[in-house]
Image: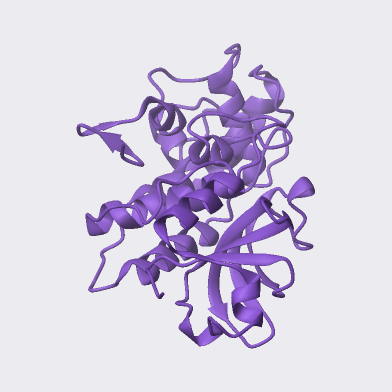
Length: 268
């Protein structure tokens, strides 16, 4: 199943995020209004996200339109909505593979997402970016780090027209199980005992934060390995790397303690 399209048509949960059928204006109510308000907040144009298009929302829409050089009608027509969702439209565009292998293209997609600063809006694990990564789902129960990772893996493999190295999941434990089955799971102990060297790991490997020997609770993409640390791009995190209070995609640096890895190509 594709990331964006199936049989040439956008998945409904993506189409809802990037298209509107009718203009949204003062007096409108519902999820369409909520999407507008979420995006205004993502642009740091604070407005209450309540699904009710009142005078305040109209005023802020007019301010957004002025910022973008659009007619300041205060009504969200298709053109204004396209400007609102332009960061999402940008990352949905395929990247020219240009001879890249899978790890390099995964890294390129991750950097493209990072550049648009995906983050939550309207509540814990809520907003258009979360719904994109979680197939339309959102809310406190929908931790989205693995969903973000799966999405960029799917984008890269679809661009290269190759199979996924693992099926992907919104569950870190499931990612680990899939990697073990595929023979691409690397334990922290493998690095410590020298059976695998850090130099053997390709950049754009997946990291999994381990809570117990068979439970992982956070995942992201390694962008560069160092002797005592590695650099990442990861979702549902924050500057402290705490997934429980995470709210964005960001770049971090982590140590190797309690970390296992998934390589995107077999090395053993």
